[in-house]
Length: 405
Image 1 (cartoon, rainbow, N blue to C red):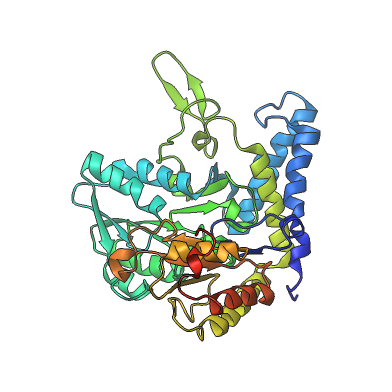
Image 2 (image 1 turned 60 degrees about the vertical axis):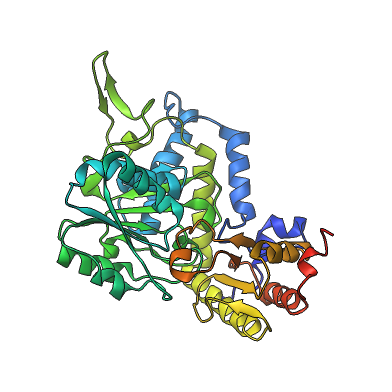
């Protein structure tokens, strides 16, 4: 299947014909089928899945709790009870960190890399502050994270290893299966967490082969709505891990003295779920399955190779991840503030992002304060990259101020 004309599936392009969208790593655009599924829920059903007292309301329960949860589980190759609905990767990573705190002893450590998203850093630093937890960072100096170096720096007292398998900035990819196998040889009781928020947009995820404990995912990175995602919790942790959202629906019994948790996955899902978001995510998975993830991966590689060819020859452009076959292109212009350059591109109707994209420790290893990031989606085409290259080629120092002076 050749994916060269997918823009027709995304209403955004019809409504914004003059714009070039290159910010999919922040959030992917939504196909019409996802938008329609959300509208249909609010227009035709709009019931709470907690209400099963009528055949009418039972339809929403079955859709959310049976059909879509199983669809997500099948997509990631795990059991449906291991899929916990959350607001996204950030909530999932917080659930893991705060839920695991009591399992980490004084002489044990949490191991992270300095390329992580802040959602995989701040929860651990908060616990470090409150409970004197030992957090160690793998400091990559002028090199991208690799399986070999991560494995080399795992110790017998490393209790938690948490990392992103695809970077939201440099775009490197780590082999989770290789890391987890090696880590468990060093410490059979190690807890492995993967932030897969960026990977879900263009890679197949097989949790059975990964052999990890936890995974965090956001639906909006994979054509789904914002405000919904999941925490994968391996079966062996479902009864041991405590929830962080307490209230309605996550309990089975309450007295004036005590309460008991509901069975997993429900014990982690306190309150009313993002029902429309879950329904939209189900439609997004159907859309991806229709296209085929192998085709998406192939298309992203084609686009990145084309972008490399176009951008590497532009004078005075510093292109940081040339040759990395991922959806992100990160660059700067010599002597120009990255935010100013992104603003210049925005003035040319090209939507990109500046900064470090929430990877706030990355400057510790790269000595680069900020970047411009252009990120690709499967709906992009060669013309979008040509538009970016043309704008960068015509850029002269001082142009970044042309629309503000």
